[in-house]
Image (cartoon, rainbow, N blue to C red; front, side, top):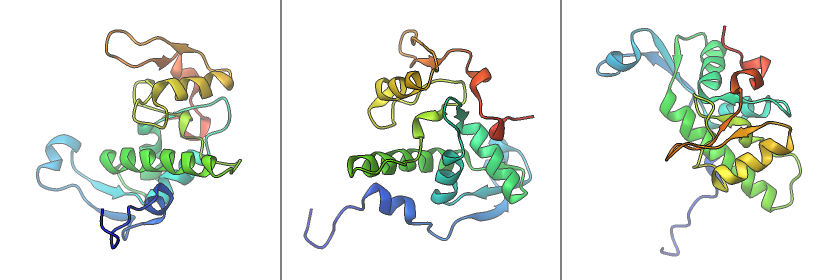
Length: 165
């Protein structure tokens, strides 16, 4: 890496809103996958703020975050790709904060994949996520084959704030 270019920290990536959020119509090839209507591409800090609302001993799925963000912006859907990426960035920014000694960090371990599975891309992988969830009284089921572990009865642990009607 050259002296001119220095990689951004996760915290810097989280703070870079890139002109987001943006609202627009679902058009072109996206209609085939997501249907018609309006969509929001959230800002990274919005995703982080939603994760911070999840209380100890509760969880939310990426789809719960997407539903809450779509409702916040008054649109039909929230972009699944950027929401997942920004949750990943928020998790790594929280790990940076924790490494620097901060006590109040974004509780990234409370965010599950859409089917209650743990996310191997989060800091420390599924082992770290499982350890943190167990410390909050949440039971984990072992993964089967190549599938990652999941929260036992995950639907019963969802945060009320993110409950999908």
